Image 1: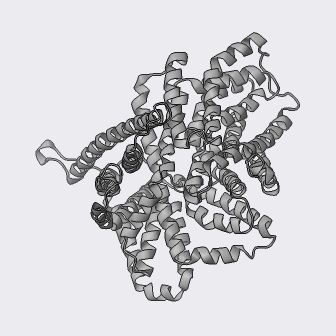
Image 2 (image 1 turned 90 degrees about the vertical axis):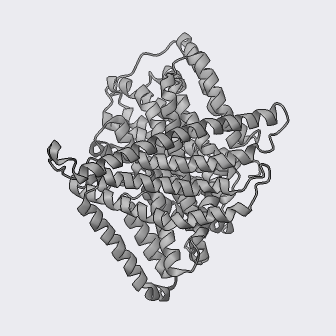
Amino acid sequence: MKNQMPMTDVSPAEGVSPRQTTFRLGRALDTGLRWLTEGSAALLVVIEVTLLFCNVFSRYVLNQPIVWGDELASLLFLWLAMLGSVVAMRRGEHMRLTSFIGRLPADKRAFVDTLGAVIVITFIGLLFTPAWEYVSDEWIITTAALEIPNAFRVSAIAVGLSLMLMTCVARLLTSARLIDFSVSVAILASLGALLWVAEGWMLLMGNWNLVIFFMIGVMAMIVIGVPIMVAFGLATVAYLSTMTSTPLTLVVGRMDEGMASLILLAIPLFVFLGALIEAMGMARAMIHFLCSLIGHVRGGLSYVLIGAIYLISGISGSKAADMAAIAPALFPEMKKRGEDENELVAMLNASGAMSETIPPSLVLITIGSVTGVSISALFTGGFMPAVVGAIAMAAVIWWKNRKGEVSTGKRASLKEIGHSLLIALPALALPFVIRTAVVEGVATATEVAAIGVAYTFIVGLLCYRCFDWRRLYPILVSTASLSGAILIIIGSATAMAWALTQSGFSHQLAQVMATVPGGALGFLIISAVAFILLGSFLEGIPAIVLFGPLLFPIAKAMGINDVHYAMVAIFAMGLGLFAPPFGVGFYAACAIAKVDPSGAMRRVWPYLGALVVALGVLIAVPWISIGFLPNA
């Protein structure tokens, strides 16, 4: 955000104005934070990848597991998560809804941005002392293998919150107007006083007070662009502080618990792997092969787009990264053949929704972490739902191109197809090896990701030879940023889900959902609609961490297979994520293609409609999700 405070004109004799002083102080603080956090986070990514690969090599090749390897990886992982979240805060990359504030005039948006920063500071301020108390409590706990105090690990949370606090202060110093800051502080102070005064009245409401904190409060913060992790965290802290006598160290503990799962170690590795696949030229090789196969038919490149998304999707951990890897390779040629750019964005957007269940999707890994469902089973179940979505999209593409209005390219010869296959083969092997290894139980998702990174480096450097080493540091920083943004949401959502469980809400929800009309089918339909709405505002991972522990036991009690329910939930969330006007995935697709959203919005509905039909098929036919499971 640009500086909104008018600078005071001063002569050299008059010195520097107070505003200029605060601006320079903010810039200096921001610069120091950038060098401290980005360099450290990038180094941690390298160390984590190296350590995990050494663990895999020692376990499977030397048959001598490193007994302290997983423990050290877990320790460094929490530091990576928190430093990554600081980097994401500095770069404005935390998950948040910008559909509403993006339409505001510049001066009003400046105020909302300042209000958002003050809300973040309030949340961190409330957890600042409890976080350091939690570190003190953990000194008496010693780790099993390294035999060091667990405080070395959990201090990452306190340090990360401290650095995020400094980041927000630097932002206010450089960009906020004094009047905006004063009004923001007054608003939050008034809300705090109102909660204090109304405490007795809200206690009489029983669990209806949850609506105030976790519906009205959370949605209000999300609408004004507050990061989702802060919306979840502040609502939880406000509820526990007002309605209970629970110490806030328990909130920090639940955040630690949410981020501590070894399964989640796969997240930064797959994010890094996805970036390498694009940077090494492997994604382009796969797309070129698909073009040589079917690029000559009517709408051939549109089918290539679906196939490319299917192959690449889920590896990077970011749909924006998936789309950014594919669009530059396909869109220029598609435009040459007469495709409308709005139609291209519509297809790109819908293909992102279609591919949400494809392993190794980070949403699948997250579901396995928070619900205990087998990741191998989730990986197996994720292939066919995406196939159904791809068929639905292909039907729309065929209908639009049946009259041959868009020109086609030249049919590739068998020699050309063979040549492109030979070039693409090392790249094509990677997605299949990753998914097969996890599905067959050969290795865990984390181990496979470490092997995939090593494989991509070796194959990319030896076979494709187009990697620019100057891109490595930005890729490492982006990996840390995206991983931190995802993991701290998991931590905040875990704390919020715990608070909802302690309130008795989960038991009440189970009672209500057990009485829905239509039994299991009715529950699936209601869940699908709910997850579409949740996907529009929260994205997939926050929604599943928050509601997965509440809804999956209910689904299981109603006789619904966990994997079937997971596929319905993920597919529905994908629809919400990419459905305008609220879905942030839609605007990401428009930004990647540099297309005005208003034009693309008119073209996207046939594709999303086809995916709604596909979702209905997934709900009605459980075999699509569980038919290939060993015990189905």
